[in-house]
Image 1 (spheres, rainbow, N blue to C red):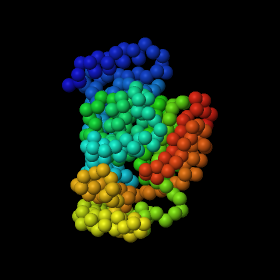
Image 2: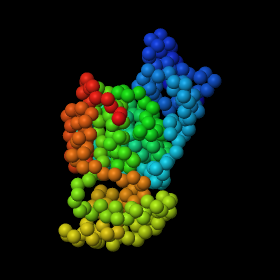
Image 3: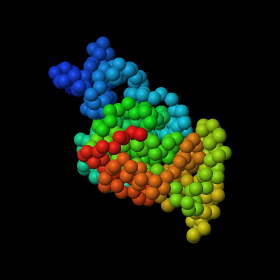
Image 4: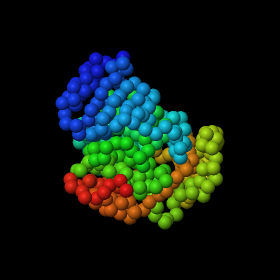
Length: 359
């Protein structure tokens, strides 16, 4: 049953919008069904500004196009497609990266790379693209932001499982290249750990930029292309083989192999200077020097080695390339620098921007 206060809010919105101009949102309630209690009215209203919306338990109708709601997730896109490996990965390791579970701040450090202050996020609308199982979603939610979190794959189901009690999150499955949301509606757009796994990172970047409201902020990261020999790049030797293995079989193999290999890999990587290179011949993402328990180190090694070897796309970019993308769309306060996952790029959309976003 929909609680009375939330139903009252929905009814007030329905009454209020009936008195607004034809260009404003019309949010209708099907009285024969209870409106989905996990959908925040404010987030929906913002994301689909100037669009006619009808919500039931099973679907959401936007401008006369109906989309399924299942598992408390709006399905604008239903298939895993080229991101099948991430659906498998994050529904298997659904909460392994959460700071409050690991008793560390590894996820918070990634968010710190944005330069955003958590205190500034309260009451702001955030679009999180490629949310995965929701380790960043939780931090934004705890900062009292209004979060719309989406993923291309069914990894978003893991996010809902982890954060279902939060009332300030809307969960969607959607395509970054075909987002159904109204442009220019979000105060903050966050997309870390995603662009390199799309078929066209630059196009994905431009699509995200279109979602930022004037004066709003965009933060992305992408694997770094720098022309140097680095230990982690050995994955590109193996990927022509591993990407042809069905993801479920590859994961099962790594779940067997990594616990056996990890002690040897740790020994190799502790050798001064040459250790990282010796340990990279056989790919193994090893967190021996991170604040994790022994069991967590094994699980992180499995899931991140799988993350390196399984995805269909792995397309890095240089610092110069990412910076040029921000400049091309006319953003200001551009800050592009090396980060924990490759290259981080932050920027602000000007209050008045004549550039045509979403190339």
